[in-house]
Length: 249
Image (cartoon, rainbow, N blue to C red; front, side, top):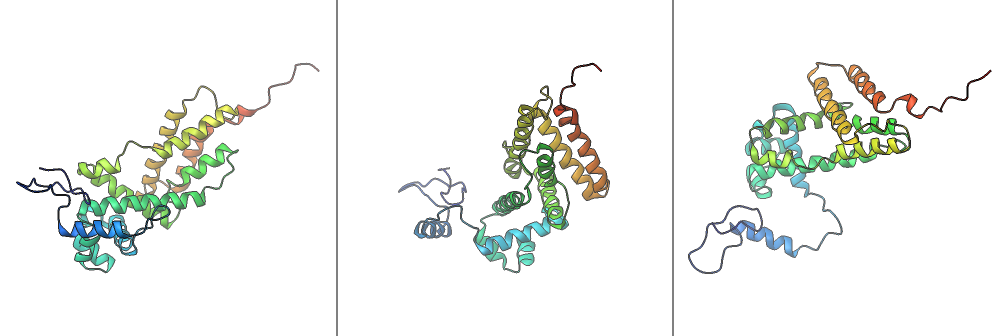
């Protein structure tokens, strides 16, 4: 082998003579040229409308039937495009699934920023707002959780997808840990808590309980009571209580 394609990452076969190969095909070479010729974007570029159309088709199939049903042909039919169009925008099924997952994360982050409006000075309200993003409170969040569940199931038997889905970064847990640590500094949370461990427990519990709601095993009201019980441990009312006054009559 002689490295990988500079456009899509496909392994390249070594040439006997001549200059080493840079692209795996003329199609990748043409895509690279178009990318170089395009003016630089001022910030993160919005996905091509057709790529988004195809990614949204992946989401719908994953939510209803699981990722095993998201073949190139089925995705094309769901998106209302030809299989050739899907293959033009995505070199492989793996690339398609990864791109759809990353776009879903971007959408979720944007929506969460709009919905999480709690006062940073109220750690209880802020933590509830964050955890709400992990619960199926409406049709959009319900569909998103179903898609993520489908990705998780697929990652168990797809090491390449698992490397993307089960990454080493945990931004949500880090955010929750930061809120708990700040609450400790203000006296709203007990100083003996381990913010990182508590964040892992809270996020994992919300994900698991949210899945139970999706399956119909628990009601949303019951899940909220359980999560509120745990939040009550993290932020007990007595943590900021005024110290008792001197005894006397």
